Image 1 (cartoon, rainbow, N blue to C red):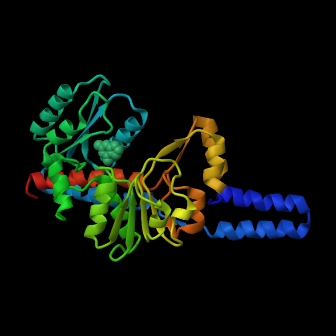
Image 2 (cartoon, rainbow, N blue to C red):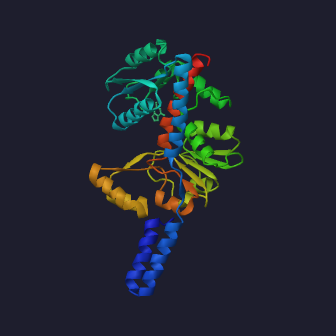
Image 3 (cartoon, protein in one colour):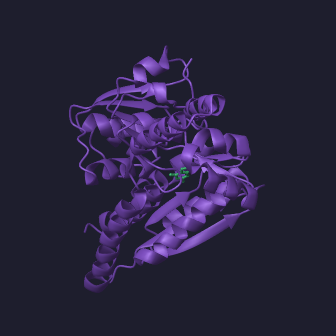
Length: 345
Ligand code: GUN
């Protein structure tokens, strides 16, 4: 069984306590410092997201000045899921940053499929609306495939409509889902070679797993998709030069899942509410995370065990501050693209 980082470090500390010699104390501190220096490079989302938003803002402004085009996104939030509310607020805020007009449409948790369909149809018909985003997940009583399939593919900035999914699967993408598109930008702008790499995607969701596998394949990676039935998962993921974790299970990807030096992209966003959990997951960074739990009741961890990944991976994305920021930036890029394509620009 793989031993966790914190076990290893507290194990070393325990030895120093037992012997109580000065030499052992220095050896322990030295070992901890050596481990501290072995940390994976962090692939921060912020600089890449800021660069993308800056490019989008320049083009949005050019469209307005040269063609009189006002780019507009409609964001629909149904119900009162707290995480979804934060995501939509961040998307609307990003619109303001890049000069895209936005309409936020809030609907009650008891909205029916028919009622939401009527909203989508109205937005489809509104020529001033370039992009339509319906935040997922939807309340249980709504059939989300009916809603997704009702969105005009030309305004489908999430790229969830079967037409856009089909184009991507064929290797002829139009709109590309925002999180997978953001991951590709992050790899490219950090000069991480995709062509020829062994890429492993853990998770096969419509939103991340399947589309990122398509995009990596299109960029000539050798792609493996893993899921709950994959046999000996760590043995498979350990082959990956680029490992994408998108399963929605806190710190599931442990050190023994990771090839030494690999690039690890963490798509998960999970709440940690227990101080013990924070100590286990965050190693040297635990203090800040424990403070966050004490202050607001939780901290966030991805699908990758950060303290263990730090000791094995070459690079990894942080949570928060990694892929999530890119999702929003790519939504801005898709909205701009919609405004241009709809007008033949
Ligand atoms: N829920 C989680 N990710 C997404 C996303 O990219 N778009 C929408 N609409 N809902 C989501």
